[in-house]
Image (tube, rainbow, N blue to C red; front, side):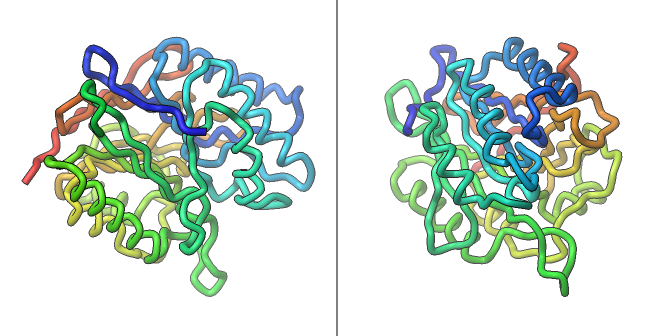
Length: 306
């Protein structure tokens, strides 16, 4: 169901990015109870305008994957805040497909995710806009399905395919043609791009890097398309539970969220990334809100507009 997103009267728009919840089907799992409790603390502290979940919402199990997914959606719906979702590699790993997950999701009034074009790879390639005070489009949010696993002869994780990159380019051009000014934008997906490795070598980085960057072996050119579009200020991913850094590469911020799930590995305190946009400005501020209430890893980005 469509829900209008809009900047607040003070000109801000706040997003809480949750990632890697890994909820199971068993209601009594203590780790899941702890995950949900932590999410409650984060949402109550931040009270965002939008919740974005960047994949691995569930463990896709032999039985009960649909039940696991409904548990997450039921929980996230309780605050009356719109939410958008992209899928991770574990969500459709066994016994349920991305199409089936989306069918479940369609029944939730606060879900504003879209299935996206059926003639390109993935389920959940779509855009959302944030309206300004004059009811014109003030910002664009891109969501892409980064896939799951690569073919065995390549190995490692999936990648955002060339037809999705073409879709992104066409969408960017559409918004550019429809507006008298370039709209600031963000992009969300699950698996980090190969450039998340490069930014560690040549970029300006803050936050934690406690494990290797598990990006795909194949670089399909999304970063180049983002660079050429000139509208996306930053990308936001999950996947690597012990990384939460943000770094700037060629003027684009490459950011991880913070893993929220207690049912999986991870040395970092569980939490979420918070992103704050500003109406009429090409900049954002961001920080990690830990589920113990503490704020850490503050980061800011100002985008150069040509």
